[in-house]
Image (cartoon, rainbow, N blue to C red; front, side):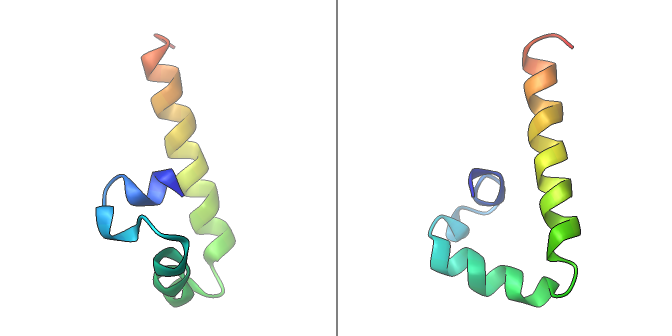
Length: 49
């Protein structure tokens, strides 16, 4: 949820995120993987990796 709200603060609430991600059907799982990968890359950069 935080990964989605970071670039677009209007998506801070779960209901807003669900409405936004409904457009991604049936590819929502791929979108989730990309969001998780972005979070992991940012965490690696902050630790120097």
